[in-house]
Image (tube, rainbow, N blue to C red):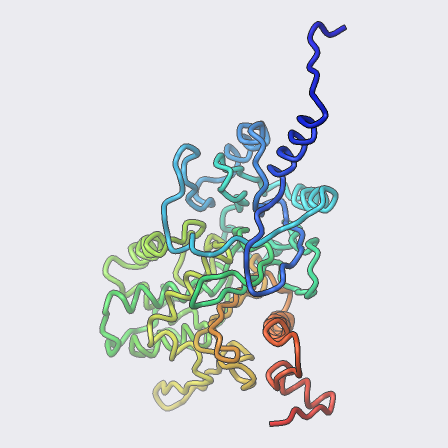
Length: 428
């Protein structure tokens, strides 16, 4: 029998119950768009929820820290240190609502992979981050499955039915998050990496007219990808930058880094320094092309990278070039933009970059204007190029429906291809 008994008056009980309940309610972000309920994967913070103290030093977390390779992990602030002030903190928090059963299914899906561990940050305001495995060894690069599937990111309740495991839509002028799906999960980003490569080249003010020569050192030996630039080909630094941004030419990109003072190693160091300067604390670069699975970031960090890239006029111009003809001796090679949305004419795109390696799936970042509103869009982990483009179209239509919830839809709410298929004709 208990020796002590606490008696609460009825009025006190009700007050205590209401007070405890208030601690569990998330803080709702005030946005002009309707709040979207969604299920967060286990690596994604649920805004307003408090991390249990027992989790911070749990055996599972300690095993994750011990087993995850040090080189494969993005830099994480010490548990006792507050996250530094950065441009990334201006992104508004989005409401994320998940049932215990749905989160548990996501945890179970992530647990199927023995190489993935979860690192739980000590501070309640820090997101849970996935510590990704190291870049695959040469010859095994194609054997790694897409990380978004391994982490179970597609179990989220997604009203837009996006194929991509990660999605983010940000107002480029205010930094307000309009829509997010698993936007704090750290994943491989593939050739989106080339945006940072371009920033480093341009900020270093290297001569864009200097002639670079493609050598054996620029040949991809990690994945064995092909290139239309033969060894011995000569092109200017500006032409190499054009091909890197427009059509993801890997040999041209590697040549840019190789001709940097200090070579490729110093170039990659500068990429990571620049990421820190931009406040991209979930980001790590391992090579300048994006062929390495060690190039990782979160959607929120990539929104910052997109915003920084859009402030470089040359990056904007070259990334949205529909095609480019490169003269190599007696022959001319025609390169086309890797982003079908640039070529179809339905979008007003100011900057873009696509990417693909098997671990990352199909990736995309864009800065585009929709009815005069400047938006940044990030998609990671799409299963195909077509699915990636379809996801972008769905996000654009979602914005248009949200902005014009009453009255007739504007012509931009239906793409040109949809109007042709359905026979619709919007009045001009």
